[in-house]
Every structure is written in C-alpha cells, then in structure tokens.
Amino acid sequence: MGVPVLHRLALNESPYPPLPSVRRAMRRAVAQAHRYPQFHPDDLTERIAAWCRVCPGSVAVGSGSVGVALQALQAVVEPGDTMVHAWRTFDAYPLLAGMAGARPVPVPLSPDGHQDLGALLAAVDHRTRVVVVCNPHNPTGSLIAADALRAFLRRVPRHVTVLLDEAYVEFARAADPPDLPAFLGAHPNVLVLRTFSKAYGLAALRVGYGLGTPDLVERIRRQQLPFGINAVATAAVEASLRAGGELRRRVDTVVTERERLRQELGGLGWRVGPGHANSVWLAAPDPVDEGAAVLTEAGVLTRHYPGEGLRITVGTRKANDTVLTALAGPVARRFRQARVPVSGCSVHTVLPSRE
Image (cartoon, rainbow, N blue to C red):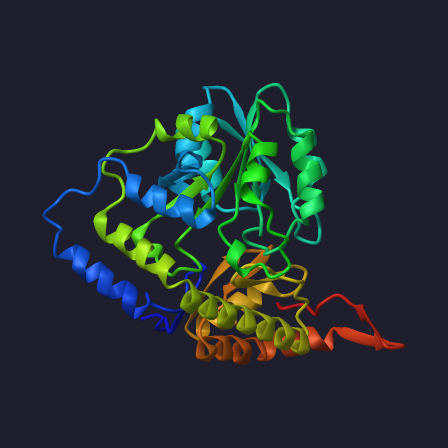
C-alpha cells in the first residue's frame, strides 16, 4: 500500500469549503433538483455583469473558465488554424485546441518562468487565430505588468483572438486592475477568462465566465450548451457574490500563507521567485524531483513536472507546515550544502551525485 494522502496540494483548489451561507443556498437549490435550470444562464449572466460593471452582452458563462475557452475556440477557429500559447501552461489548452480543430504552437517560457511576450508575437503568423496568455501564469505564478500587457495586446493582429486567462487574478496583489469596459473597448479581440473554482472555492460546481465585447461574446454564446449550468451551481455563485467580504478575507489568508511559504522555503535554500497565484513554484536546477519525492512520502500531493518544476498549492496552515517540514529534510540539506557563500553572495555549485 502507498503512503496515505494527507494534503491535496496539486490542483490549486481552495483549502476552504463553501461558506455556510453558500451551502444553505445550495441546499435550497437541491430541493428543486427535479426542475430544469434555465435553458441559457441568463439570470446568472446578468448577476455577473452587474458585479463586473459591464453590460450583460459582454458576459459568456460556461463550465468553468475552461468551458468558456472551448466555446471561444469553437467560435473562432477553422480546421488548420493555429493557437499560440506559452509552455508550460495550463495543461488543458493544447487539448482544447485539438478539440476545436486547431494546431497548438507552444512557445517556451523565459528562464525566470515568465511568458515570453516577444516570442509569442513572433510565433503569430497567417494561420494563427488564437493566442493564450495566462495572467497570473499557471504554473509559475508569474505576472505580466499592466504596461507590458497593453503593449503586447496592441501588437496582436485584430483578427487574432486573445484568451487572457485570469483564473488567479484575485490572488494577484501586485496587479493593476484595468477599467473593464474601457479595456474591452480598446481590445475587441480579447476575451478575459475568470472562474469561481479558485478564490471562490467552487471547483466541483464548474462555473466560469468570459468578458469581451458584445460582438465577440455573441459568437461564443452560440457554442453554449443548453441547460449547461445547473441550478445548484448558479445558487452557489450568486450566494458567493453576496458574501464578497468573507471571501476576500479568505483570499487574504491564502495570500499571507503563500508569502510565508515563499519566505520559509527561501530560508531552507530553495529559490522561490515572486508568485501571484494561490501556489508557489519551485524550478530546476533546484532539486525539484527529490522535493516531489519527499513530499509524496509525507502524504502531500503536488503538481510535479519531472526535471522542470514543482507547483505547490497553498493549503491550510497545517498543510503548509507539512510542506516546510518535508522540504527541510535531506534533499534541502544537500541542496544547502551545495551553496558556497562568497563575500555575502552565494555561488551555486553542481549538486553531488545521487547514484
């Protein structure tokens, strides 16, 4: 038998269940489960639009942000078109491209884990119909500054749709949120993707939304599955929006724990860059494979990219302490011993053989 899983920190889920008020709304909706939901989620669309201060025609709702992304690809892609995206990124994007009949074109991240905007632009050609940009990025948590993003979007041809994936935007304290109506008006080829799975803790209910100009959103809505958003999910989202203050405090707690993890992992010898999602990213050449192994032995599930990196979702304080204890073990000690201080700096030497 394997080691029992104590902490699930692999999927960037919230460590908290839905709020009590949200659970009450869900129970009320369950009592009406013999009734169909709306053919199209018009009421929920209007509620999200009011919350985002945009017109209802600028909102598309789907089965998580990934569902809206698929609707968008189906709306704009023809067979033989290409979709440009950073790699690594959210694993679903290459799969979605194939489902829509497009060929994915991966563009390597920069060495510091950022999306290389210049390289993404260089990969755009006459066959490109979609470019994907994640901000904050998944899995590294890196953030594109507002000025750099605006400059990038100005250079993307208007016939190319940009999927601006903001699944983790609620955790990005360094973000400079734009005025949405003005932003969408300036960039009519952009669809902003957001979700209730992460900060709102409703991952199992699968509700996401896209924000764009009415012309673009109308095309995307044509791909919407009738009765596609169930009534329990709708009730949970609407109750969550009413509980915005409580949910912001939860997000603040996650951000505080994220920064604690970053600082304490740095003290153990791991190089952890600034992160803006609900996770921390450990990258090679740090011993990420060994780190994944000791975490598994400690009963912690994480997202391991062999030879590349390790994404650790921020969990409860107990879960995060388990992570820190595991990574302070023999792997971290050997790693620290491979750093030789020189005049207040650190010189990284080759790690010892593990044969």
